[in-house]
Image (cartoon, rainbow, N blue to C red):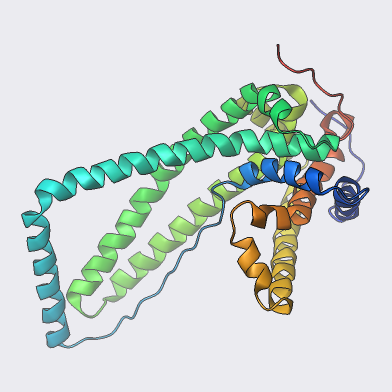
Length: 316
């Protein structure tokens, strides 16, 4: 679907998103509406607390004594594992299976929440049960796409991480790293960074643009992605600019949240740590982020405007 676009602004949606927040939450203020939309926002953010990659380490030229101590610790750990493998292996397998099952459940609920929250923001509604039923097909398609994306990312990222781990283990055994080991470790981390950024962009575009296209068309995630790719191909510069501006915007929102926590003597930090209550407290920012990407997409033509779309009937 090609649409002639004269000018696309990354700043105009900021003001539009702020006005949307005012309209939904403060005109008039309704605490019940806050909590109803908060349920949808909580589901849309479920399991997305963020990822932390703590990289660090000391490449010291340790003595033979420290090297021998490390070797002794490894031997003790290996011996303990061999002695307790009869009960340890079933426990680990059980925990892994339960962890995967919980992750799949959270991912499924989160996919439902994406459409429920967009429904509330686009239509200025405080619905929970209606969008849960109405967008079940689209949400299930999104869920399957995210599962497939996760497996693809693991197929690419795990070998890179394994390479980095083996290189780090070789450096630990040597005591002093060789230049070739350091180069290999740097290349591994650069490869991981590139792959992680690529999958991060796919993930962001899925939430920011593909979900709204599904919302409008009532189509599958792959069909919406094909339409989004055509649009991105026609307006590549505009979408690159959107990514860069989104980074700046996220940094500004992060600084704002930190400032509020400091000004309230970390009271806000305690509230944000409480499940669901933290989501309700952050609801203005969450609505702003959801509305910002939707208003940006709407600049590419009426066919991409979720705020002017006719409401779809409930499934029978």
